Amino acid sequence: MKLSSILLVGTACAATTVAQADLFVWDWAAGDSGVSNAGGTFDSIHTTYDSSSSILTWEMTFSDQITDGFTLAINGGPNPQGYAGEFALLYFDATDLGDLRLTAFAYNGENTQTSYMDGSEAPGTQAPDEIYNNISILNELLSASVTDAAGARTFAFSIDTSVMNAHSPLYPAASAWTGMQFGSFIGAWVHPVTGLTTAYDGNGSLTNWAFAHDGFMDTSWRPTTPAPGSLALLAFGGTVATRRRR
Image (cartoon, rainbow, N blue to C red; front, side, top):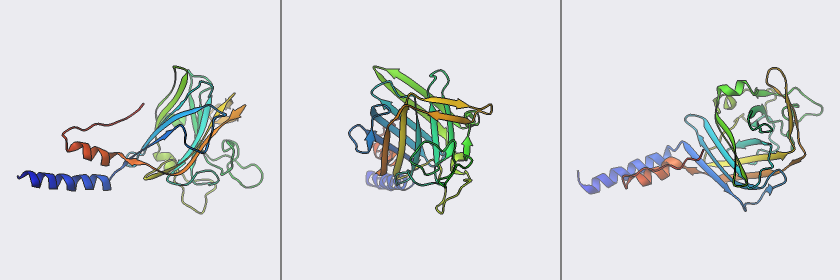
């Protein structure tokens, strides 16, 4: 086969790879707007989502070591804040670095971290819509860690979000439930906290999430990078490289 034919086929394959991209990558760097460092000084965020396997990874570093945990909601576009019954809210409890605990609830739409105790934005207090307690989540949690080094603290986890994405919300919204996933764009609502106190019942359900200070990182419609597309370009040189962070 002539070289021109090989290049033509390679170009077609690269275009197909871009069109069928299923691994999306997003990086946040210090200096972006929409941030409060009251719960820890944001340094960096690296996240990936594989739409084929539904595996989400999240790595977040603070340039100090005061953060005790955080809550996280993400979607494929707008800032998740205020959208009740559409997304999961993940709680990451690192009050004991030797016993990390993660739980998840349907987000109640409030600009608070109260979804664990109140499932709806309606007046009064409604039963929480628990997706995972800190025991059942272990079936889907692939890894979780908190690392202190050089004055910084890094939180990281990897989880299969299939169950969260397929959850039927107890208090459904007019718009479809999406759980915890993103694609070509990402919206994120992150609240790190300090002075965190937590409690759990005998089933592993979160019953208290109280803190002294909380910060935030709110973002919407940030474009992501489709990883297979970049890999296809590297393949022409005969070398394939990936960048994955723990």
